Amino acid sequence: MGAVMNFIRGWARVELTCRYSERAVNICARNHVEFWDLKRADSGAAQMSVSIPGYLKLRQAAGETGAFSVKIVRRSGVPFFLWRIRKRYALLAGLLACLFLTGLSSVYVWQIDVVGNETVPTSQILAALKKEGVGIGTCVLNITESLVANRMLLDVPELSFITLNNHGSRIEVIVREKVAKPELYDRDVPTGVYARKAGIISEITALEGWGCVKAGDTVDEGDTLISAWVPQGKGFLTHAYGSVRARTWYELRLKMPLAADRKAYTGKKRARTAIILGGKRINLYFMGGNPYTSCDKMTTYETLTLPGGAVLPVTVVRERFEEYERTPAALSPEEAERILSVKLLELLEQEIGDGWIVSREFETENRDGAVTVTLRAECVEEIGVQRELTEEEIAAAGQG
Image (cartoon, rainbow, N blue to C red; front, side):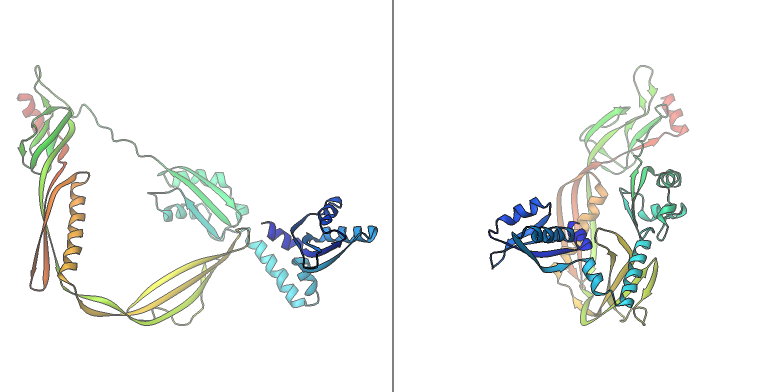
């Protein structure tokens, strides 16, 4: 940032010559001149960079004392640039117009960043912002951050907190999502725990209710694991719940043909560019659509910014196309077996949830141009599911 300010104000690289070059620092300090990048030149003189006012102070001191001399080696910055083009009126007018438009664009929103959302889609938050009048091209002077945030909490009930930070032409939206309330249950409603699949019980923990099975028992789908009827005293119904883990067995099978089409790239490539200016796209090409019948397309977006992070209302869109042809290719039995084995394990892990695999084995069959892989596995998983009792079940339990 300091380099940018020095360029705007202008600076000069000067050579300060005196009897002893080490006195250059004292001369600058005595005359209150800030300098940087001090070096010794080949001639023995001290070279340093100073601001324009600093150079004028040194020149005045050199004229008054005669103890040293100072000369400019190089100059740079906006003031010198403007001086060089002072008679080029068209260029000067264009520069002033560019600076004016850049300053004008800084009071409009050209970028919106949403931070903190995990389950609520960014598109939903942007749509709610648009409803409240905040979008690309909106004047930031017309945005009341607190008012917009309060209204958005009503529009998006999944959010518990929202704030808008104005960074010139960029709006940062920070959100916090509501924490889901724990599922509450009515203890007065009788429920039982039943088996969702067959297995051999390995562990049962009845937190409430009456355990109907024990470790080592074999159960079928639908069997009662934890009963809502507690046979103590005269007996009573309760809201039964708990955890029941069991050993289960799976046999999963997938099939894959060995002949399949694959992409073969021809080497032909094409690129094209477009510009999004203030939300409107301007294509810098004539032919639309994909240039090839079959091709991969990669699109990149680059938003232009000024030094310091100010966002310009210009986004460069680059599209790259690479042609390919589909050619028949034979898949090796080993590769097909590897692919199917990975998919079978993924299916099994989805099925058992937070359970685990005790043992597994694969069986592969190669017949008629296709590979079939069978997975047989023993697992331990949660099989208990909670269900509310029907009126008939409640009546039968009471009679029992």
